[in-house]
Amino acid sequence: MTSNINELVDRIAKLEKQLTEAIKEQETRFHYKLEGTRVRFEEAVLNAHRKLRVAILPYLGSSTLRSVLSVPFIYSMVIPLAFLDITVTLYQHICFRLYNIARVDRSKYVVMDRHQLAYLNGIEKFNCVYCGYGNGVIAYTREIVARTEQYWCPIKHARRVRHAHSRYNHFVDYGDAEGFKAELQQLREQLQNLDSKQKMSKKQ
Image 1: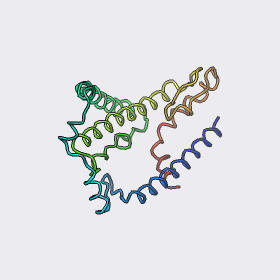
Image 2: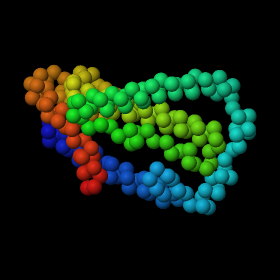
Image 3: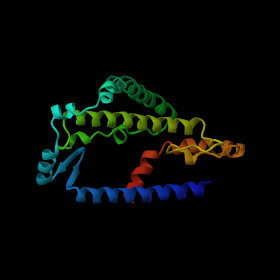
Image 4: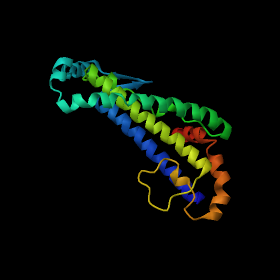
């Protein structure tokens, strides 16, 4: 069990390194650089992007009726999303400290940078911020719940789980009573050092 987990962790670290390299290649291909949370395009590329931007009035004029009708339903979802964001943040800051679990870094999940693209108009930028926020909050919440599950009930399901969360492969097999009793404390201790392990894998 432990050797399999170590192999998976090593494989994930290698994939993360490959992903970083692929992102660097993409930066070169599309002529931009990341400076913290800011994206800097070359001036010539930026000017070309501005020429491709569709003004707001023509953009609204090309909207379909179904798009207009869906607007209040789409944007009203910001209320439950914001509520979820606030409550899971409070939850992890209180409970994770009590359980001695490494807290989830929200900034790694809630990423909003597409509004910096010059070929998007104001409405498109707002929509991109909204979608980035919504999906980011869900991903952030999922990681918090995943760590909670590893602490309290790290047992795999009998049935196949589609798109299992990041902690699922660490769990004990379904029906392995002895394994659950033997490994529960170790699985809980894993959650204490997640941040340090992630930093080490990035340096390698």
